Image 1: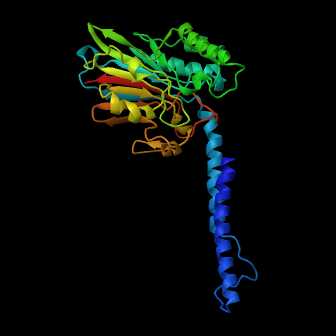
Image 2 (image 1 turned 180 degrees about the vertical axis):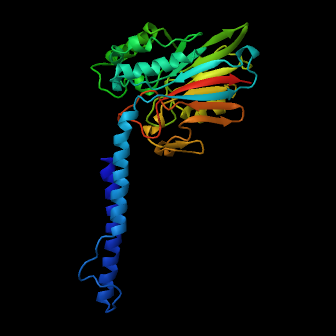
Image 3 (image 1 turned 45 degrees about the vertical axis):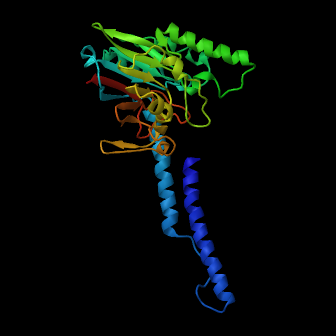
Length: 335
């Protein structure tokens, strides 16, 4: 569909060109002028036609190639400098993953390679920022044994994304939807993941602490509900501590965190997947998703606050990746 739409756009542009010349020709004929001879019609532009065919074909074969990248996990190393980071946490290693979307996954052996890559980093902490499933907790039945293998010295902590609430399917009753969310929370527990629901915990090392805050999904875009409650999540948090916030949707950063919670040092998000399509190199980064999300992949900074947006572990809709690979982020904290 995308490739056909791309081709049709160029043909439509050519038809507008032809229609304009035909109209001008008719007017000139009616006034006796000889501006343009339209008796034999106006042929299509060879340039526009071949440009449309070329670009649509490039898109088609790129998407076809991308099918093979859906389990091509990339380890992204990122050093994050935090103000007032305790000396005990200098060099502290955090694995950040997001958007597993287990309902889309099919190949266990391929996914296990991603899990092994995570564990090989011997991280101090693993943080997951939501969208464990597409819609239903039952999607995890065949995957709990896989993702429960993720280990870290200080544990695995998680939060919810917009897909985890079951908002995109029709339930038999409100109770059925609520039960699905309870079942999903149980899945996190069964895997040994500590689910943070508008709450915070202290991570301790050598008599020093950093504060981990996790909220439910909070999106600034109109179609995404705001389940997250920062006032609850930040209760009893010392503003002088190093504070790391898990919040699925990166639009939360500018919409609320920067304005109302300047004490948050680092926010970790996912959600965008980098649209699973784009171009990236050390000097250039582009994806159509940037027309919707200002912060969509990688690290962003405003004053002393930073945001990191993970490109997603899984996939949704299009079962592939073009240019934007599935990501496992290894964050090293420095001061």
